[in-house]
Length: 452
Image 1 (cartoon, rainbow, N blue to C red):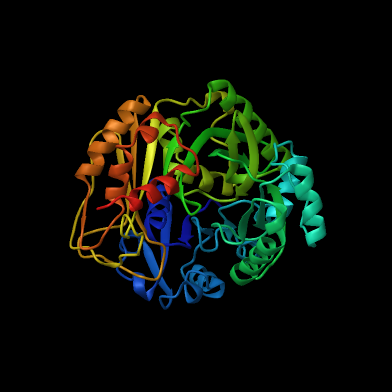
Image 2: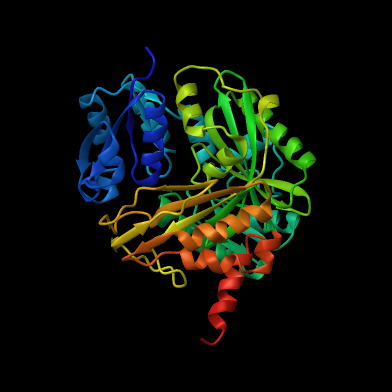
């Protein structure tokens, strides 16, 4: 039986995004929500809604038992996890399938493998993806760390095998600081993820963060949909993303895309995934794979015309990929700004009531958001409240359209990161595409050091 009713195990703009794709396919949706999200837009628009707990995510959006119960009560035949929360939880995927529900995501074993950074690196190397020089697995002792660091050369990066977001990660400039920083990384990793396993890799001086969108049917066929440049980051959190990357040539895109697609075909990967690399001086280095939809997926949709959420649902339903590699065309340029409810310069969260809201519009302007006037942004979850995505026939026209759209977008009652994005579009390095993953933090430091 084809999928007819999907439970959306998420909230906010991604829950609304999934609802829209499903309804366009004639599929009913069930929204789950905490008590804090009772008035959220995805709850209002879904065909059915089920409250799954109080505001804390641990008691609602991370409560597996409540989510499964909601799916059974509402008569769902599939669950889409979105991103964040339980989207990369292999145990949750297994439980979903054990209850005869369709899991709209990768196979649980692939989620588990790629969610462990040590196992992911080993798997990526075996599949032919280029790796950052470093340890072949976990590093257990300081003596082993010294030996590996001496082989690859300082500076090195000590990284937690579990988790992400910069926690459990330390840059070690020289041997004298290795033991102390390794101990700190382990302590942070244990506190954040319950696992103090770390590994070591070469620290790259000034790289870019470039990721490839892939899609597999789970039966040995896979394609890539080009790359996204996500180098504008603060504390390892992406702020602005664009596709294609300003620095890649068509030949580089074709070569690396083919390598990624062939690796996923060999793996038997199912659904959407993103293979992330550091890029420096023309060389790619695998850093991790996200076995889910990405926040920044709309820029890929804009330049390919392919609805990634629709494709996720189709593949989970046992259908073939809707297109072949030779059918995909990369046309124009797209940029996404993540708009957060926070102070644009201190980044302090700014939850509260939205007193006025006006979304940007016009040709090739897309806003993914669940905001509306009167909505109260809760303080319990991620601060991202909207994504502004703009397309242009080339990068210059895209930037001009983005400037105009940011000027049009009005969110009152709370502070937002819109002024940050407007300021970024005045910077020569951003306009030329000449930035790296370090650029934004260095620019923010310089800006804060200047007298008011």
